[in-house]
Image (cartoon, rainbow, N blue to C red; front, side):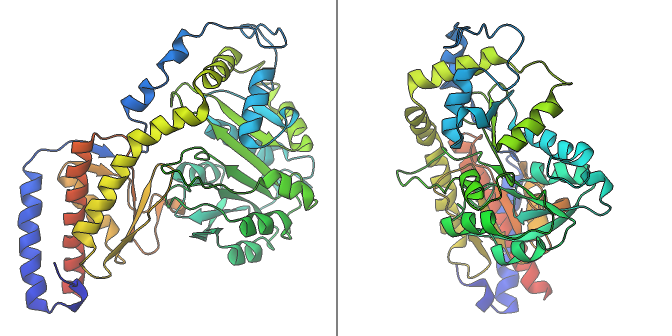
Length: 422
């Protein structure tokens, strides 16, 4: 392969014909592969089957977790997940299996009722906006879109959200908050730097009730021995005199059972009081039995040891994708670049402007479903139509190899088409 950008029209046309033939050969294989979501593979879920054998139901305080009560979660769970979040038990609320559900509740609280530091509920503020570092997590953006927020794109950098943009935009009183995945971000795999955390904590905001939705979904999902992390945002906000700014989330969704885990929230005393008051009419308590069995199971097997087993299953898949991208696209010139994360669940592939939708469509026609082009941007619209999120976790190694090869053929074909058209 040669640099596509240096080829003349005749050479590009010949390359297009060869790629079209290779693509059609793939299409004849009848593939049916889905790489659209970052789901744990069955082998990863199998690592936690002993959860189903744990029958403890009384926590260290003697609470019968089978019964009513304990809206904030059982005491052992609050202590365990507080340690994971970096918050004391009294500032940790442990809920059901979905941290995303708790994020929705926090946004709904601000929207319908307002927080204790809100001049009025967000719904009464006219235009309301939320900052969306992109590419980012589509389900985050969908929550605020569902409430009618104007989604404002902020560029994502290897240090986290572009803080020059964030600090400038936060001077608008209509801007009520920011989404962020701080460690091994979805989908780039970037980790917020200490400088970014400090600026987020200290920055001036026009809205007194500005909230940072800090979804530490991949904080323990390392793929190498070089574990990345960042400072505790809540502690930084408290030190900066903005204790209510940070609302931190974590879950076991990709640690134990994706559909049967535990989600937790770390937050200030003021936010804790607001959230408990908001939740009180809708539930007496979450599934404390599941909370307790998770604590006992994770203490027994060791969280670090369990995550090493996950990494043992995931890293070969990430390596296979990276090796295929390098072999098939690395010598084609500046038609593509990709991230090389040290943890998390995704790889970002960046193509020539205007090529991502074409590549996703080509792959789908040949039997490989990818996350929709633009899905990682507000309203599902990538302004450059260049980004594709790759989710290597669920397919088998053989399926992944085939899918990555097809993806590269489609990327090269779309690039050649683009160059010929220009």
